Image 1 (cartoon, rainbow, N blue to C red):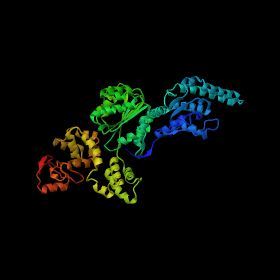
Image 2 (cartoon, rainbow, N blue to C red):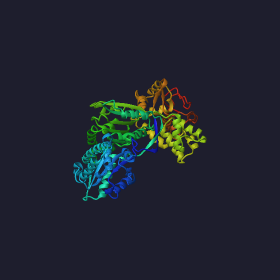
Image 3 (cartoon, rainbow, N blue to C red):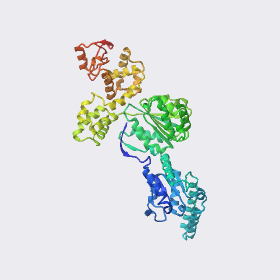
Image 4 (cartoon, rainbow, N blue to C red):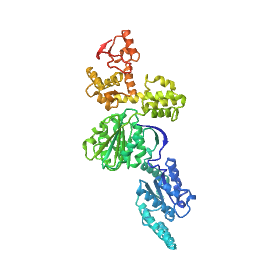
Length: 575
């Protein structure tokens, strides 16, 4: 299990230092167009490298410029009248196009008061500049240097021809420069997908999940698209983990999209999610999609074309996958990551039923944190320290033990302490007595996702009486009470509300157990005799002693914690 906290910033998957490198001829544009372009990029929070005139010394391209180009995601090349007269500019151009050929380096040429054909055919000012370079080469008396310069000139000429064939922008007197510069900035934002850039979280917890998912993304042994389902109980960190992986690796794919909290999307909101997906897939007519059937068709057409990383977070119905993925082939190098509380939904979707092309499915179950990791996470959120001070360590450990490795609970309780909403003593006193509303809201989503009332009743009964009891024993009693159908326990397990541990015992996370009991308690907070279930000795005795008359469902299972009232007859009885 991986827990994430937002404290460190990411530049990109490859640790790029700059978003954009500007290659330009200083005497032509440094004090006008390039200066305006640089400041507009900077004001748009686009990290841009602009060389200092002081570093332009010597015959060879300086190491600072080489490093800047190699550590940039994109280059803007301002091809002006005197661009080709500079050997530095030409060397930059060659290196930039080399980067484009070996990485996903984006290149945008700007034809600043020159025409692309002059660049391509090396004529007019470009022809004059190259003739001057050749003249200097011929005047060289050192044969080795002469040969090197001749080789360079060939590379320069090829680079000029290649850059002229790329799609770029023409700057002339027909359009205001400010408008063109805004278009360039918009293009950079779109092509670099800078809207996805944000702080990358720090990991607290086991890194094994990160390693497994990284291997999944980089696995080239299979010629099939691959799907990974990350599953686990609510609040265990599925969304945070998927978010971390997406921010770390989306640059490695041609297209990418992260759709968050799909389970909270209303039925009429799926069209909005489709449009979000199509926009990130660069489908130009995404705004014209009017219904989900049309959206699914366009998604099916778009997905096979390019290597795509898609994260679908919070899937709780396989029909959501049908709407967002359809049934078409995926690009063989695409990767789909799905987060869900169930591991069985993915293979029920139409994409897996059609089997038009090989499709691999892997699953990753997220487990709870260990005690040391829990203490570190709580300490970070509560004190902004990796571990509590000596005076707070004992009480903090009590909180960590109660939370049993549940990241969301540790985070919420820690933040309430840091924000001054509660003291550490208040938190300790409330453990097991009441659930923080923010925690309960997330956990209750799991229970609300149960389709049938009998499954919800079974959840409450197990929470009250049957944790650490034998599965067969529990199922026999529940069936006799007409509370449990044959698949009831399996459904709770699939929803991560329950698990079976050694010796066939049922285990429920303490938070879910507390929530299940709280759901019963809320039926009548002040009058326990009006609740459907009683499990605490004190309340049972109080009801019996005071001869409160109400139809309740008796405590029907022995509880090893000693806080339940046992009954030999597990039927509804009048007390």
